[in-house]
Amino acid sequence: MSVSLSKGGNVSLAKADPTMTKILVGLGWDPRATDGQDFDLDASAFLLTSTGKVRGDNDFIFYNNLSDAAQSVVHTGDNRTGAGDGDDESLKVDLTKIPAEVDKIAFTVTIHDAEVRRQSFGQVGGAFIRLVNDATGVEVARYDLSEDASTETAMIFGELYRHNNEWKFRAVGQGYAGGLKDMCGLYGISAS
Amino acid sequence: MGVSLKKGGNVSLTKEAPTMKTAIAGLGWDMRVTDGSAFDLDASVFMVGADEKVISDASFIFFNNKTSPCGSVVHQGDNRTGEGAGDDETVALHFDKIPAEVQKLVFAVTIHEAEERKQNFGMVSNAYIRIVNADNNTEIARFDLSEDASTETAMNFGELYRHNAEWKFKAVGQGFAGGLSALAKQYGVNVD
Image (tube, rainbow over all chains, first blue to last red; front, side):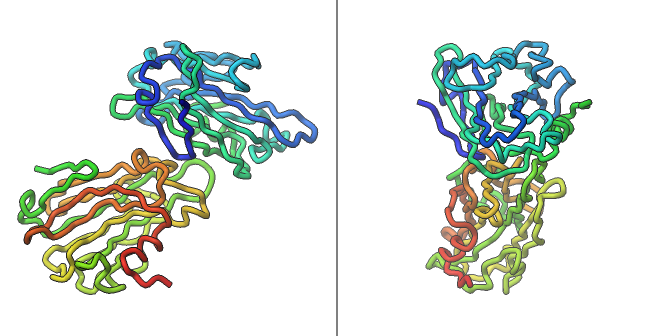
């Protein structure tokens, strides 16, 4: 039975599904009023140490860097497969392969060229992040982002993090008006 | 030697720290890095009598009423963003000045304008409240608000209470709906 999270809430994965070691993190959204240019939303992940920063640029997983060195987080690419109930993009996480120094993985969504196209999350509805046990296909947790009208162009949907030797997931739903650039700055990536 | 309490636990301060003259309730949190209103957490203390109500309106110590009439409880000031390392807000307690009619001191933490700003403790990073023996800087109890009070907006953290002629501290850690003004009303403060 899937745990439905509210913003700020967190859940222990070991308690929600003790057998789960491989997770499919699915992100989805329905762009609402389109008036001209399409929305190009990109899902990414940042592998963070206890300092809240990446170890190197290779820990920023996105469509041009599909996995980290340990293959603990793998981006499945820009494809819409239709499987998995409407996930638009997904990342696969193998809990057993996450390096010991990685304390947290932030799952984010950004709007490509948001400034140029004058787009923001305020125009995006039906956004969610969910965790599925990749071995069984069963959804374990879900966070439906409420439609707060917002000027953000980059958003942290949720975070997988270590707490007292277990993995937990927290529903974040907070973002940046400054887009991917601001977010990369926060996580210690020299974005160009 | 300090005793670190879990929720629901209690400790005799008279036994553990028989010479303690001053305790400090310390509240800390990280500044917001994502966009949106700052997180403004507030520490308060209710000095209550045997009827579980404050002995006077002036015995509700918070950012707008910093010193109790007896001088035993002193709030060091309002921090509205969490800026600064360590405890961001502190309330000092001087044991030898607590009036005989005060049976209990209730420590609370609330998020300012939580409803309007749509915030809860889970959205704040590294939020905690703790009690420290100020004479030797030993921590007596600590509660992780971000982790364990995640969807709450107000909390009764703990209570200092008289029991058989000694002072004890009980870690309560229970959330409270309705914010600071509802909490104040419960303890008999005239709120207008």
